Image 1 (tube, helix red, strand yellow):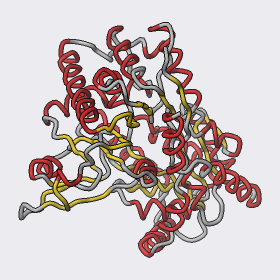
Image 2: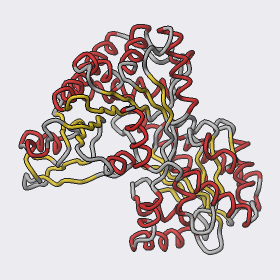
Image 3: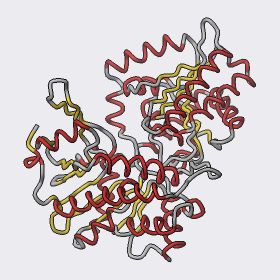
Image 4: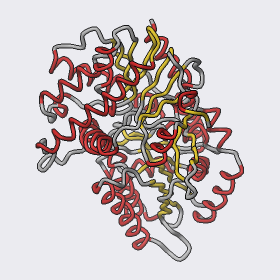
Length: 463
């Protein structure tokens, strides 16, 4: 580890801003710090760029201790934002309002309620975004390129533009964008503030044309247009080299052996790997599997649903309730249909990347049925590492549908009966067709790997 001062670049030429950074710290019992480095598309993409700085928030006690002790990583600036402000901004606004709007998750007879408490939290959201804008303005070299990530930092481009008009600013939305009628749920002034915040960027970028068009429609409705901001579409692909290498390491082989034992010999597998986010539609996926077993009894004892539902946002009650419902439905299926030698649903709730890759390799069918998803990389990762070909059952509401829909079995995520029929179609797909579809899915999935995805945005921003 190095001091925070040494970790900074005095005037960076390329800056990335995101809520979560590429490294996190935990406090050991003896008071020392343990650093853990993350992965993902941004980390991989940034590896291709020199003279870069990543600005992120300190997310826990370990991160804050690192900042206060002057400990950091080269090329990373971690912001020690007041924990109460961060909680309001992250849980109160970003994950409980903006996420719900863009994923269209509200039960509108009862929610949302935009009351004085919302306004108090919105002030924290502004403070949180301003902290990022001020840090970026301080660290950026003359004419630097700044790429701001996601809905958490929607106000940053506009704030940064006022502080540093010389910068080239991009904003990338990793989520869907709400259609006009749903975006109208927000108070008018808040809706306009969000749009103007992103329009402070030179380019506003999205994972699919559908989400870009929805953003443009909202700008037209509320502001009369997008002004001078360019609109870009960059569909993030899977990191094929990393996935294929990692999927054949020893710990993955160990997980495969354990899963095969749980599944039993000669059985087909339907695999899903998700965080237990409300948008992932895990409960309806389980209900579709139950419908398959009910209406197609020939599949009983011949198929196992391997479902990985890793906890997400458990500090929010609605997510805890949803996680409990996933467990309850899985238990009910096993109780109703299970036999001494067959467990219909193998459910794992503890995050384990090696086990996820093992399931990818084993899958006969991958079920990816989100209510709404910006992209969904699982749909792209499974075909890339599949050992013997895998049929993909894919929601038409996933961003990945634009690229993968032609070779997937496509479903309406709300239609449990149709999803059950799609699972049967996928399970009975001829081996040759499944292998050919997997080949085409994998080719589409890796068409824009993370490094190229990032470099394309950077080049377009500089142009």
